[in-house]
Length: 417
Image 1 (cartoon, rainbow, N blue to C red):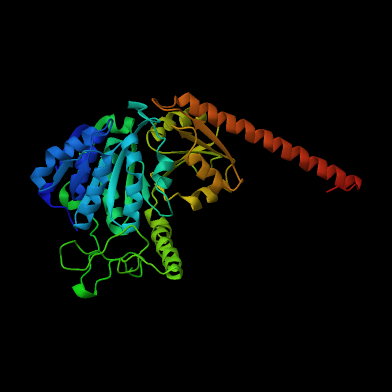
Image 2: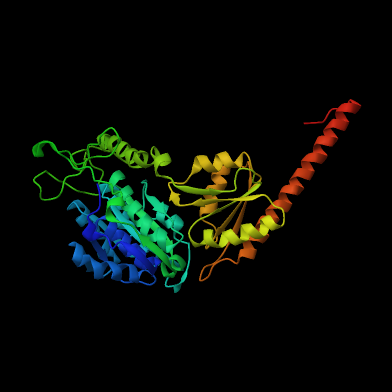
């Protein structure tokens, strides 16, 4: 499906990331945003509100973030592409309804322009401390998709990708930006409408009286019907059968809950290789790999350059898709390198998944930052040097152990277990 020319503001602009995200939502086919102003994401909502009427789209400012996310679930079931825009405190208020949306398999997008926290924190300063909240913020088992842009151009491009993923997999998709990217002003190219690939939602086309809202196809994703089109729709956050009806029988409820939540997870996990997008640079012969995302990836470029000038073999793995996590890629790299270095504007979140997937095959070094600012490139360079020194210590110990074992073998002694 191609975008309609009237809905895309083709051209070359000098705009910030928030504005680019608003333009990207429009180009993606978003036709409804329910939101509440919050720094540092407000300009994205204002941009969409300004341009929406020309495309037949609607922006509504709600009384709070609780109402904002509720409206977009309703809009999603009305058949339109929909989104809300927020930052830390508002994101926290949305958590229960994110789980509700996951259970209902409502496709929608959330743009979270992260700031320093907790609580009110530093509203005008940057942070990356909402990353685990994106993955685990609502109760129960479910899966989401989260993307971390690093530039205004990517705020536009990945807004489109986020909507495409939401429509395809019927799940919440998060754009996990940060204040620096949201307020950074750079060149943004908005392409012609006929070059933008948009995903088409899978709508039900059978007899209306036979429609089962939660009966999945072979891809584990149920076709949707628009509310008001005459199909029977029963929507509840309770554990439900394929009709959408809550289950009362205890034994049947246990069985249904297991199969329902398993499918919510499997429709993402089994397609992880198709969903995950990464950017690799210089990892072929690297001893150390810097794993980063968002604005931290921009800062890491100089840190890596400084370390290379000192003769350290270091590469870069940028997480464009953070959730689902690239488990297989990290595990594969861990077998061939000596250490991962992870700069995060938090005190350790994504680093724990790197450790989990490395399985002890490679050392893992976190470079924490409390927020309201970014790392200095020298911080990253110093951490790379530290990892390199630690690797050399380990190599020396292994070398000594090998020599000792050889000597003992030659002398005919046996090592005690």
